[in-house]
Amino acid sequence: MEFSAEQISGILNGQIVGNSDVTVKGLSKIEEGTEGTLSFLSNPKYEEFIYTTGASICIVNNTFEPSKPIPTTLTLVKVEDAYSCFAKLLEFYDQMKKKQPKIESPSYISESAKVGTDIYLGAFGYIGDGCKIGNNAVIYPHVYIGENVIIGDNCTLHPGATVYADCVIGNNCIIHAGTIIGSDGFGFAPDAEGVFQKIPQIGNVVLEDNVEIGSNSTIDRATMGSTIIRKGVKLDNLVQIAHNVEIGENTVMAAQVGVAGSAKIGKGVMVGGQTGISGHLHIADGTKIVAQSGIPSTVRKAATLMGSPGIPLEDFKKSYFGFRKLPQILTRLQDLENKLKELTKVKL
Image 1 (cartoon, rainbow, N blue to C red):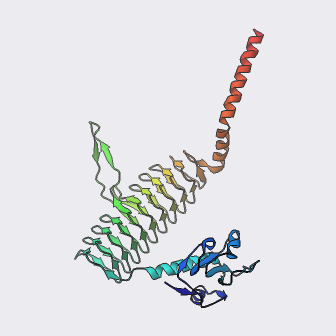
Image 2 (image 1 turned 90 degrees about the horizontal axis):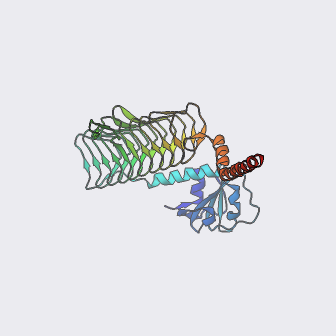
Image 3 (image 1 turned 30 degrees about the vertical axis):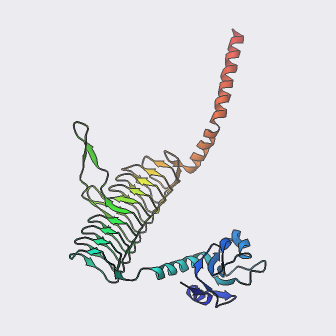
């Protein structure tokens, strides 16, 4: 896709400084800019690169005034906020790349399924009995959608995504490649001989509107009732959500987070990568959890937690400082014990 500086300025309501006819076909970091690419500058730390970049167009803030001559091959588009405008342009570009409505072959749509208008269904896609698929859905090749699944409008399911029977997905959701929605929760009970017997998982998963799930993540169906991902939640790749978990609105989790069964996560919680959260607990709205932490018990009041078990960040820093000093402290303690022994001998 090719854009001119004039077109970009029109989309962003910007002001052109330079050649309005110059065109770009790709994007680049400002420090790696090459001819025919579009870049942006919002962080003053990167200003030095604007004087050497090979990019053809650069989006900058209205307040930007060059302190050196910029390359004659570079056209500036001045906007109110370069960062947000660049993001807007990316979104615009992404929408233009969206798959056009089409049902590819071979694919399967059950006769009892109801499919909305303007959907794209890639080859080897499967839509099971009783499904309801909203308008403008984009379902890439090799996606499996089980019986009685409901998917809202404007959803995208990337290649290899799987949605098990009876699950519900709201509007404007994105499910990335390899993700599994609605697999069985990890439910087993030992019998009298200690052999684990499977407990049927008869619930489902509910994703509300504007949820995005990264690649190869898994969200288990409830034993009974629903595993619920509230609106606006964003989960990174390789995240595991167990049965009957509830995640509050606009919570975000980085890669490799694991949440055990029946945990209730509040609104606006931020969870760093590789964090483990135990089951049957509550985490207060607005809590922040640093990467690789472990949360074994309920968090009743919002805080920034770190460590395993997670404790308030400032307490963790003090504790870690003490831990780093532990070898020296042990050496000093040993020295004191030795001196005490010597003093005791002298008295005798």
